Image 1 (tube, rainbow, N blue to C red):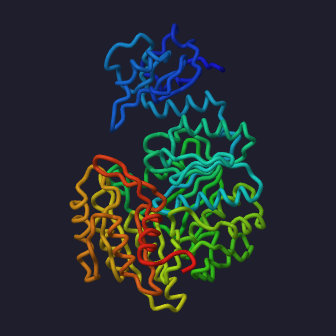
Image 2 (image 1 turned 180 degrees about the vertical axis):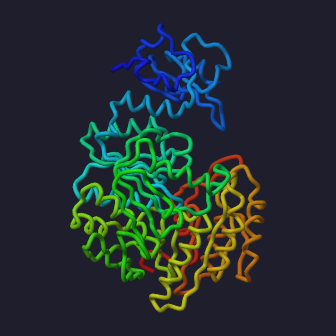
Image 3 (image 1 turned 90 degrees about the horizontal axis):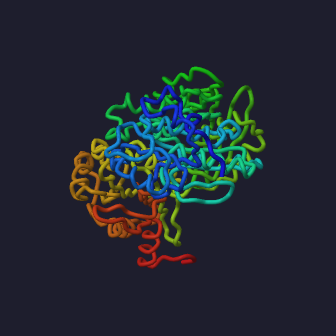
Length: 498
């Protein structure tokens, strides 16, 4: 097992106290922020988090063999190993993880995608194009992690820096070339990707979300900008020029590609959106290409443009780009269809902000218009508990304004009363005369809205997307909108081949 000296892992400029001459030569065999995973010789990071204080577990870590503890704060009780106090613990961990693992971010080309909506789909498209082009890749995001073809469960949308560098190190050992990841505003603000070398940074859009954490749109945008300003700043930036915040984004250095439908260097013209997918003419740098994709909805034109811009900065040929786009069938929980032979379309979507909900409903509406069908749009949604309350009435307004029928239900209520959350959303929903029902039991609400559907309608089950669970006040239960919908459809007499 390799070891690194404590003084080589910590930047003295970050250290406030505890790194003395008699301790800086300590040999460290591994880094860890979870005391349950400590092995002898490890360096333990005691984060003072919002949910729990890592200092409470310092003694346990020491008893398991930790040779020192790093924290932003002083110890709660004395421990018999050095206690190194630093200015910013997560920043210090990111630097230490990079050193310990030999800076794999400098040999693996990282692409980071940030924004309110579209991160997951954009990263999946990028990864699919890269894999079709023969690259060995890793994909890190909300739906899950994939490392050189191996699927893993996602813990966070953006992992802690230590976990990220472990993935990069593993990918490098397997001959990997590229890692594509979603970079959340929380991760940027907390320092999970501090100092990480990104080859390409992508900005999708910015709309109201996470204001329980960021407090203002200005603070939210400032967090997103960190991916583009560094340090270090990325070699290339790909930015949505149709987004008002994207227009304000000015990377200090590197190649910049701006994309859009209305403006930008990389542009989509003559967009055709049908139930069969998308077709448009792509113009960039004097070249024209016809892009065809099985993804549905104009919103995916933006995701495709973002992904195409990103892979072009990574040296992928146009032939490989177009083939990778054609072969990208879909992303779990992103306008994912549920088929049971029913005469109406059922789509499960992760939309959980008012802007995302509007976009999803507009996709359904435009598909109906393009097909010439006279069907209605029926929307089921809920709002998450212990999250930004201000977006709840806005989501109610979005659903009611654009839908023909709405079912308001629970999402992940967490510690909050589901009825209180529903009442917040009703404030916005009742500003319109849209026919609606309120059913806190999500399974019953799904059954009710499917029973309401008629031939040629489009039913949207919004909010949870790929999730296979529901978080309640006292427990987490198995719950998958797709499976619940299939059972409800079967109960109504539909089935494969019917």
